[in-house]
Length: 240
Image (cartoon, rainbow, N blue to C red; front, side):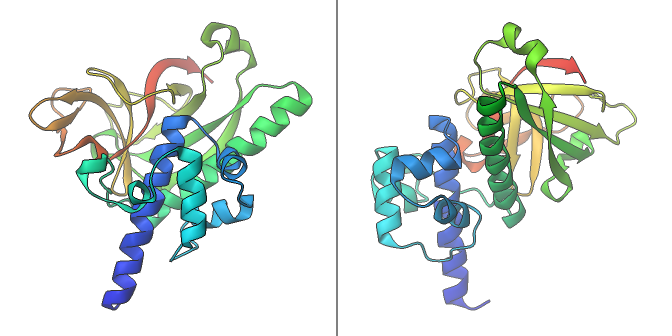
């Protein structure tokens, strides 16, 4: 990879990450962004899936207008606009795109057939090491019997296939996370960092600490919370 290719890859990665941060902040799907920006859905899918190396300024302007931010905020990796770019892998970005696409289809299906399916993520690996994004898959779950308890919260499910001998979570459990805000002090949630997802407690101090739920597991120490992508806070665990 030459210098130009490296720059385009870095530039693309920064933009995609910033768009996903905005999507989670506004709680929008890819289809909602398409509608708000007045851009074709396929264009949004290709851009957020990393298929477009050098997005047009027109598309960036339309997306920034939808998010009510400047184009600079979409393309910047500086802390001054609170959008540092974590080194998420291509698989992370493509999985996020797949997940948003699945949630779009479920939204249409639920509205059309009066059902209440939610998207779930299946994660395989070891809790202490994080769960590699290459071992993630998506599925659906009928959430109807729990909807009254959790109201109209936008919920994503996580099933952990933990290979650890002293596992914290079991494959017949569904961890419910809510995608409604950035983490507060002490929140337990799902964090995507580099090429893995982690279940950690958010403890900001001098550095931003993602504390392990067990005392003997190493925490993740970040210089800025925007080094990772926060997928949501844990609000409950149910039996599948």
